[in-house]
Image 1 (tube, rainbow, N blue to C red):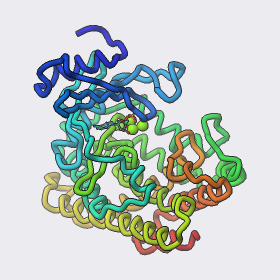
Image 2 (image 1 turned 135 degrees about the vertical axis):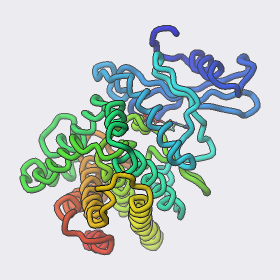
Image 3 (image 1 turned 90 degrees about the horizontal axis):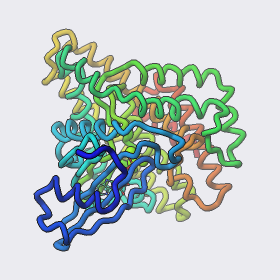
Image 4 (image 1 turned 30 degrees about the vertical axis):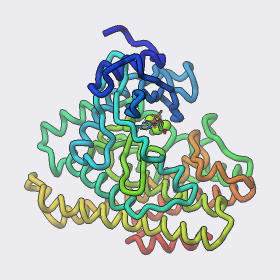
Length: 399
Ligand code: ADP
Ligand code: MG
Ligand code: MG
Ligand code: MG
């Protein structure tokens, strides 16, 4: 294989042609690069019969910043291997990888052209009853079956070693847990919430809790995480949803994946205070989001608990009191990481359209202030919020 080089559309077509039996006659292929992500190139290769595939290639730097931010292309291996593993554990809700090429850091995968990105759909007010149950199933299966409850000690440790992913983890370590809590040049703070953002830099009690969540992120290899389960990494349509973009995958705390998703649903909830003027329509959509957060946790925890009871082969971990405590800690972790997501998406480098799209900057500032407040409450109260009902109370006390 040739040495790594950045793909042209020609290269992407050749790559797709070589590694799939789908296309046949190369001359009839067409290709466009359409990636809208922060890091990588994404090509769609189509033939004239309407068949298409996706080629995703890692660049040796972060696309959103440029060559001044070098980044390992080994992240394509992580992405391919996490997706392959997760697809084995949850085929319905994981995108299919057809081929991975280490030299070119390129992945050939199914084209989800009959799906839309969840974030866009939620911003436009679309609702899908199957979102929470399907994502609960994805999270329960991928996380349980890569944890110590399911893997033997030596096998687990070998897996942990395969997915260390230090460079991408460092991005999360910085952007999630460090930057928002100090005056960092990478932060992106709108003028309207400058004062509330500055309070984060001097909030020692909050910083102590965030330090704990970061320490766990650094040293709690519970399961093979997706590592970037925001609503831009989920494709959805009327029947199904599928997860993409697992380059941040590594063995970390389970609550990080669950909390990231809940955090994104809450960001959309807060965004609609500014995105939707009609109060009935807004209330209806926010009720939908609350019900999704509730059912996500309910179904995730029920499935994870069921799997612990029936599929755990490690004698000591079969203890039911231990399992209860484990779920209690996981709930607290989930709330904490959801809170971190709210804060870092509001004042950190990478914002979300759910807030940024609010056209009136005063209203946007009010929504962002709510995100900071809710984020702080979730982090600080994660051990005392006993259940989902109390979380909902917190949400309602905001407005
Ligand atoms: P990045 O890692 O750079 O964020 P993503 O994997 O999130 O890249 O992909 C960026 C965009 O490319 C997605 O938002 C989506 O529009 C498109 N895309 C990625 N994978 C697929 C796929 N399998 N099918 C259809 N579109 C895709
Ligand atoms: Mg992405
Ligand atoms: Mg991205
Ligand atoms: Mg990505």
